[in-house]
Length: 467
Image 1 (cartoon, rainbow, N blue to C red):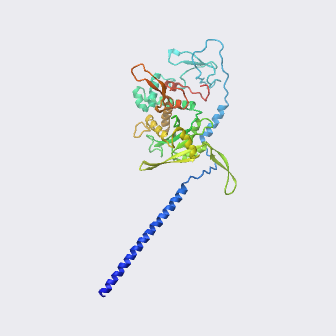
Image 2: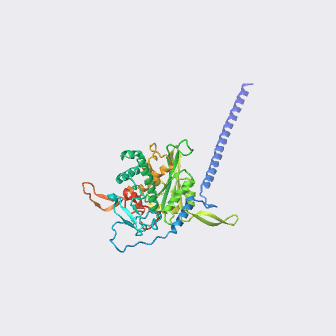
Image 3: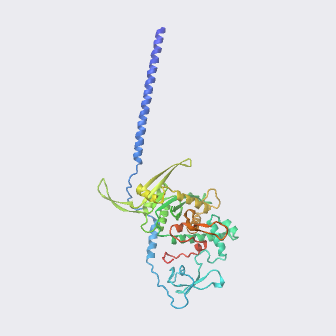
């Protein structure tokens, strides 16, 4: 082969290589354009799919087991008729107020009834601290502390009140026993009785509330000594509902993270609301909240099917129901984005409720309440001693703190300014604020309850207007 032929072959190969490079760049460019178009189409389709679809309703009504049991109990209470009031025309007028006391003997006709004139004072037996009362209908005597933590206790009442206040402030029972020099089992007994009493007081005084907002959330809690026995028993969840305006703690439940617990929490909220009141519900993205809210605030609606034209019966939310969710996106245990979603109702209706209070769609108030519960309930804090052994033990501490938080503990954000500062007796600064508790802000009470008033409050077997 001559040199000229070699040069020609090289020129041809170079020309082919240049042509292939040009064509390859064109192919790559066209491929990128095609991929870009495909991504744009997928993005548009995803945006169409993200558009909220109208709720079509449920074919069956969700069942709340607690509602079924409560309906039977309320029916029995409606059938009760108060006995006639006893009037004393002769003798000295009584000076001891007994309107908030009732006869504790079930065989008596006046059992459980308040302010019927059957309770009179009978002095202080053996010069003791507590007064003795008498029911003139059955003639039996009883102490004014019956049904409270003070009944039958030889420990001074002041020590019991201080010990229970210490428990409410987040101290474990064993340190409390060492502080007040009593046995730890005695303190555990006070805790059980005080928690039972607190639950009864809260259930009695909190009712017929007119609320515009309710925030709900669940809090992780660890149980000590339960690992290895049964699967899933080493931890539980604390379900909480709060009113963002009055900071009133509405309901607390302890259990697993399931639909049944969400039903119980919403049922507790419904129990304190006035008839016909439907507040705005704000929660996180847990799906169980939506069905629980729909169970208690839904109704049957007749709809005409667009395909077949038949009349369909669907369980739909009420027109006045508004429910929104806060969705948090996490990456490496950190929140990177927060979005909101209106589940029931319209955005305009939700914004109108929040605009009146100056709020936005959030769960900040209930999350701040979780911080308060961690400070007052040992075991809820992270890396902390004094964990509860069982769910019932944790629930006792929560119920005791619930009564203390609502009735006895003033909230800094709820205080009201006095028209004129009140000077103090010493050299301190004048008093400028009136302390208020969540119960005062919610219209449940008119003053800050003391620990003595809270623990001595006698709860009747059923709710009455006289107390």
